[in-house]
Image (cartoon, rainbow, N blue to C red; front, top):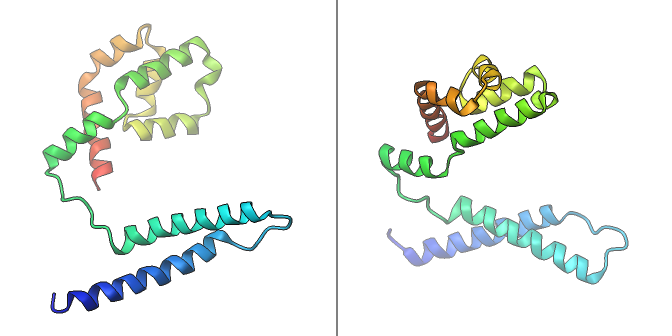
Amino acid sequence: MEDPTAFFTDLGEEVQAQVSDLARLLAGPDPARETYREKVARLQAATRTAEEVVMAQLVWTPAPELTLAEAREEWEQTRPTDEALISWAERIQDCPDLMGSTAELEDKARTWAVTPEFLTSLVAAPIPRKFLAENQATMAEAATLRFLREVR
């Protein structure tokens, strides 16, 4: 960097201008009957949000890239567990009206990276936990697909 002072001065001015413009846009026009305190709160909230957005776009650098193995390990620690799917199936068994429409089933299947038929079989199984245990290969493949979908 040839001239760090000029670079950071220009960056600071750009950040300030974008924060100001975005905060004004986020705050919007003054509502009728807005009190002074409400206006101050609205303007401060808009400014804080604008600062976060602009800083994320112009200043903050992303964390160093993780290896694929590290990213998978991190994802495994934070992803919804298969237990959530078992709980869903058991709730449907207890109250079949909760099953929802075909579109909702297809959406859940897409989310979990399994087929709608797999979910229907899970709900129809006498013991959903046992069904997932017997279909662990399918669940492992689905987990890999979900991970790869999020990594992209």
